[in-house]
Image 1 (spheres, rainbow, N blue to C red):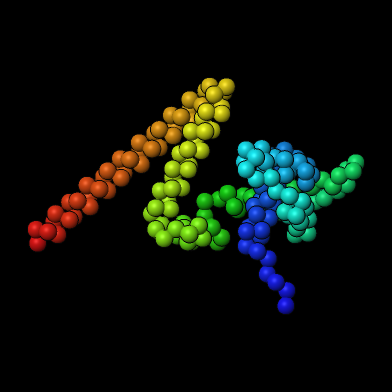
Image 2 (image 1 turned 90 degrees about the vertical axis):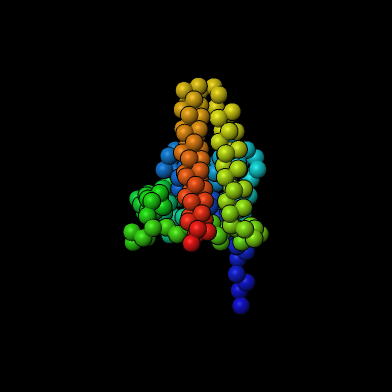
Length: 182
């Protein structure tokens, strides 16, 4: 019996494939080394997928009709097909398949990441997201208008979220007082 692939490797290959489609859609034809290089740039060197992730992912995209491959000079290049564009549209659409809302998978991710408490996992994810936003703003200081807009939008969103939390805390306290009076 054939051993099933390791989950992290399979997950990474799917991510590499989806990112490859995104790059092909945005920038045109793509080759394996360019894909690996772009992922390393976007992750600030934290991850550079090797040939064992990149080339099988690109071949799979071609096999299932999401991309076409062709030889160019000494490289094999890949270009997105209409099926690949349709897949990206479905993924980007807010609803899941058949119009159903996408389920929140946070509780599953919390377990995968070894967290016993989903709330704590989400709070850690929020901290990482805020840190990433701050780092992005710091990196893009040369493009002042965009940086200012991103900073303003981030502060506005955090302010709205803070107000919702404070309102929820007041509602919970009011409910506890009403229950205690009974």
